[in-house]
Image (cartoon, rainbow, N blue to C red; front, top):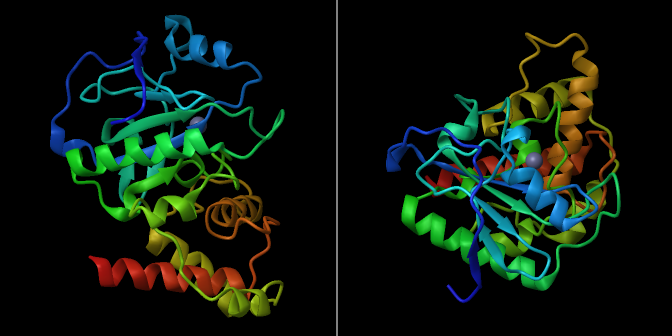
Length: 250
Ligand SMILES: [Zn+2]
């Protein structure tokens, strides 16, 4: 890889080595802190009990923090399809960005290049499927909003990393804001869980709040121009297209 690699090991990981075949997902995060130096320290100091395998700096350099075969502590309580507690099955990548609480900016071109190179390397090494490149918010929609609506999913998909709904812009815009009836709304949430999102209401006190969060998380990923937490015809079409593209690719 062309990028500069450095090593700054974290003490926060499980000491038992995992099997290569158990690595199935790549999870992207943003650091959400004002200072990059503080973000690095947070991930390596034992008292914080958090870490990631890789850290992509603002200048595009990559820091290796936990060897890939060990379980880093980046995802927390998380679900995707039938998987729970996704740390054990994933590689976590933290990307330097102040996040929504401070100054949420575009991921810069050096960072994007590093994200793509690193993801390609992991994809090949662990045979990671297209739909197994995920954001932290995808696997913990009730708690997390990183890496957010500025994450370059579309660019990644052009490099065969992750998936993206390739639909005509004109078509999408014509459906934006158009309401769904109750049956279609139900269908949207049903399809979200078919796609991988965990939308079970079992343990939730307020399912409506959760649905809004889930919808926002979906929009941050696939309808980045408008994130309002309201399901509309555009969102439904995108989701149908995504499910269709997974089916024909698998
Ligand atoms: Zn995160």
